Amino acid sequence: MEIKAVLSALIEREGKEILLPENRIRLTELLTAQQAYAPEMQAFLLCLSCTDPAAMAEMREMTLTEYQNLLRSCILHTKLQYDVCVEDLSLLLSLMQITVSNVSAEAKSLLPEPELPLMRKYCSYEDVQRSLAEAKAQNDPNAAATIYAELMRADVTEAFYRYGIIKVSQEKAADRRTGEQSLMTAATRGHVPAALFLGDYYMTAGEFAKAHRYYCGFGAPMLNAQQRDHVYVLELMKRTNLRVIVLEFLFALLGIAGALILAFRLPVSTGGFIGACIGAAVMAGCAVYAVCKFFKEPLFHSQPLYIAELTGFFAALFSLIIGTDVII
Image (cartoon, rainbow, N blue to C red; front, top):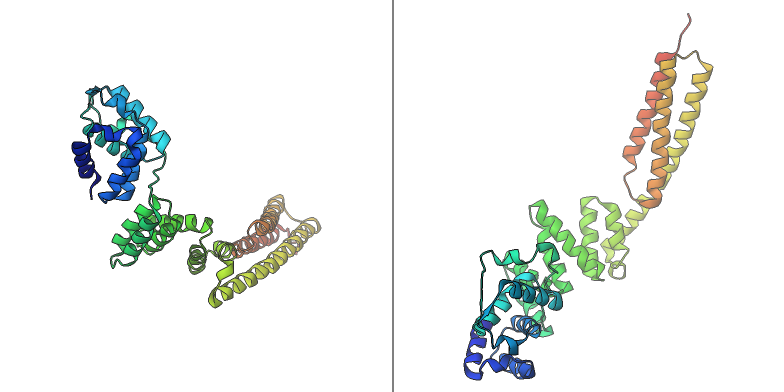
């Protein structure tokens, strides 16, 4: 039942005194008996706890500054979102028959957006379980996503996981990024299915370092046979990467040494010598970068660096050939 109608009926029957702090337990019992929606009821009671109903009962009008201070205090103390506090305080002022004077701007201009804390919706365990069951029973993914989004406001980790699964299957890149962030939130809280889903997701996308991170992090205890095979493949890739990088480093050393020896032994022009040095520097840079990158992220793609190193080698060789003064 809508809380506004319930509260209006209670005020009419019990009087404004029902909103006083000493009657808070009775007010909660009456709202519960009227089957008021629990999250809305709890949010209203939180906002009510930040006010002084006894002083407000004597008021007929509130200045804009007084309203702004009341709104700011409500947000900072309850940690509810701006819109929720505005709605509940508006309801309270309406019940107390108090008007706010000189309100010419939109309500959101009263408080700068950067100062607003994130909303936290308050739900009981029964509310969470009922909403999860309702979302799972939905045939429309968008309808389910809406329910999960509401549960995310209550910080329900399972909702982050379910919402993320729906979003990463969308066509828009922005939706997929939102889904990834949602799944990451669930995974970093120790949600194993979310970690495993991300592992599979990144494995399919070819982002092997991320896949390895989620497979071998929170998801490790519940890997299935296929996911264990993926981890085995990733470990093989890591070893192969190491071998390629070692060979790349040795090739760079031999290529640089050979280029320098030829440059000093052959009658090479200044331009050819500079070209050979640039090619050698490219080889050295690629080799050093590959080694440093491997220690930081063993599953990075080393092939582009290897191609760049080969390019540097042939550039140095070409420079030596072109710049050599051949005497016939």
